[in-house]
Image (cartoon, rainbow, N blue to C red; front, side, top):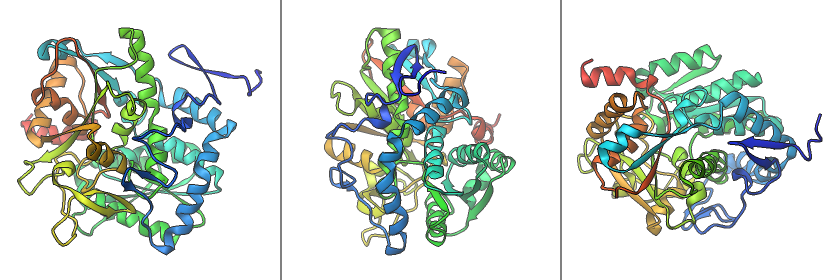
Length: 423
């Protein structure tokens, strides 16, 4: 057997040492658009938490970078991404979609990950970390169910107890994923307060974590929550943009596309797709939010258009709220995008002007999803369909190279597609 200190890991036939700081999760370069040592992205981020939660968060903050740098962690993480998740995921040239919109469109196929979405990149990383911190019980929140499924999957793999909190509304509209979680051995706990969606599931998970600080690790599924979660999740997801650079170089002879496009709720898939392009200013970053029934309809989740600075789930960010600071209930046909805030990384991208933010309605997203089915034979998650709708709402040049992060597959959304299109 080769000496582990010299073992090389191949991604797309490119050799990476497990200690190579070029690789995403160990990239500690102090980017203007990335987190600083205090956990802030510009003015956004931090850890605004009750005293009861401080020991949990502080333990993680003190250890997450050290654990990520461990050789044994790197080895196990990369092996699981390759052999269990199926990475690298393809970068697919969407020929017929490109012909229709007269531009070059590539799809980063995160829908082909084991469990059906990008979420598993993060859950594997966090569960490996939890084990090294001596945790035996895992809790998570989920909206569309993809993060819950990914968490339950890796808990089954590792033999850990798994409890997933999910809004009662989302349980009803994401029944297939609820069944998957139960089959994988997870306990699914409904959140029955408030809007009974992702925000409320997160609240319930935080309450559980406060009550079980010693043996429990809370796997947040997005780049939200108190520091270090936004940074940690972004690092685990950054494998997406690392692969895009390598794959695009093979296909186009260049590492940098003209634009990277991703849907944004909390923003984990977008963080992964944007991560290695944050400081490459010639690459346009386009974040697509859920306008719901219209930005001004009162039933929307377009945080960049409607949000003001506030605190949610331990982080200072942009937040949909009333004049007196009460959180506004979000709406989206997509369970994974109906969050009233946005991760602090994305709030900073919006406030600084580095990111271009566009809002897509329910109807526009559904039509874009069906279009991909008919043109490319790919059924996307409705979250991803929001990103695909960019082409009906924004013009690109013929020679532009655009990478759209196809964050998940549409199996979980078949019932919504069936009802919407009367199939």
